[in-house]
Amino acid sequence: MTAHVSTRSHLLFERNLMVYRRAWMIVFSGFFEPLFYLLSLGVGLGYFIGKIHGVSYASYIAPALLASSAMNGAVYDATNVFWKLKFAKTYDAMLATPVGPTDVALGEASWALFRGLLYSAAFIVTAAALGLMHSFWGLATFPAAALVGFAFAGMGIGATTYMRSWQDFEILQLVLLPMFLFSATFYPITVYPHWLQQIVRFSPLYHATLLIRSLTLGAVGPRNLVDVAYLLTLGVVGIAVARRRVAGLLLT
Image (cartoon, rainbow, N blue to C red):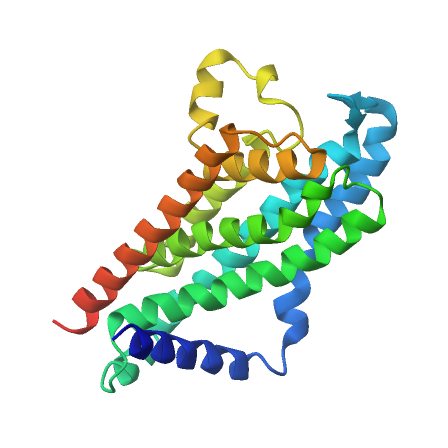
């Protein structure tokens, strides 16, 4: 049974791969935003800021931008589910075949994760070339970015199934932008007021940033297991919600 689900999910992934085979620049474009932040803030503004926690400002924000890159790739592709679900009616045709709601949720999550990994891989190579990896633990940033992509792909697809119109995407931006700015991305969480610190600690991107920053700086510890568990749980719950919602919307 597991083999069948895996095969059908793989077929959905292949479909997306074929759709984008002539539009790789669109898929890859999300890499440039965090790169511009790194060069303008990390290198430019970092000249005046100096060091944070014993490392350059560029080294400090690079892991956070890597986590943001994985998040953006996964979320923005996951939101394409809205078009397929509401307008293209892609899944109506799929569910008339042996493909089921679980296959749809896993297949779309796999593709969103793959897109996030493309962003992350390019950013990791760039950060390493700039000398922003300070530990051999940095080799683990790629699987860590995969975990981040999985978490946000699951949440993104699950949330997309609740969207009613294009205007709802404004709510998505209202969530993503503050998360990007306040998840200890550009400065330590200790600079926030105490009440804001407690809110930030629930941010998925905060846990993603902590995990990847620990790897690039060689400060890995048991605390990172909490980050891993938190992100893994969010991804699993998101996919489960997506699977149930697709079944409820299209099979009833």
